[in-house]
Amino acid sequence: MSEIGLRIDELLTEKYGDDRPSMEEIALQVGMTYKTVSLWIKNRVDRPDLESLKKWAEFFDVHPGELIFYKADKTD
Image (cartoon, rainbow, N blue to C red):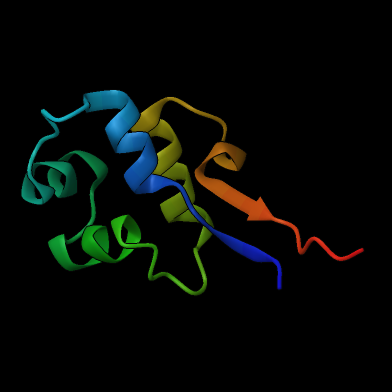
């Protein structure tokens, strides 16, 4: 089965390593609530909205497409 999801946690590790800011600090910088940031980091957002994708893309200084991963189902 193919899989699609968010790379927020991975991008935070790439950007900050082990010295990442707290979720409260990230929430302030991104302009979201603590709970919403937590859901995004844990890849528990079913329907990412465009405004949130824009905020994360600006936070990481990446193209919005870089926030998402896709793993195709490998069938022979």
